[in-house]
Length: 150
Image (tube, rainbow, N blue to C red; front, side, top):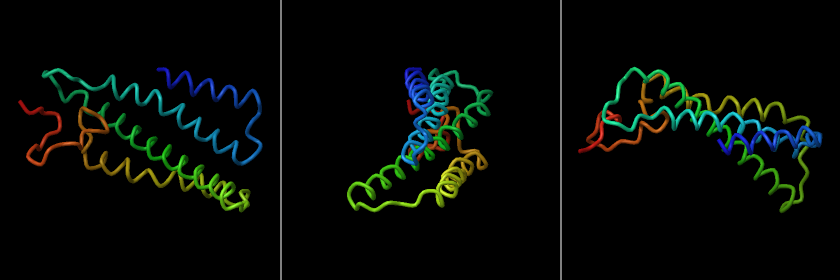
């Protein structure tokens, strides 16, 4: 919940200072918005995991949806951080200015489309389990990620 508070505060400061006129400021605004969406999704992911031995498959659809959102927003956040890093490296180290008006919409569209297959393929193939996005972490001998080794 603290991440939600921090992201909301950062978003409020950006809006109050109107710090979104330059491209670099808008990149951090995009990152803040994704973090604002990411925080409650992670909270729901942690809340939805049943750590007891009385696991039921009734929560499976909810956990699959939360797992999809966690994977999608994680990929999106990582892509935006990668783009910010590359953008700042190009400006600071290489001292080259990028004409951003031409590429901003296409880059952001690309960022929102690239993570979709990585989040939707496990959903379509029913690979998300009751542990959400991290159900695919299993041993070679284990077929069901919801069962624990005794």
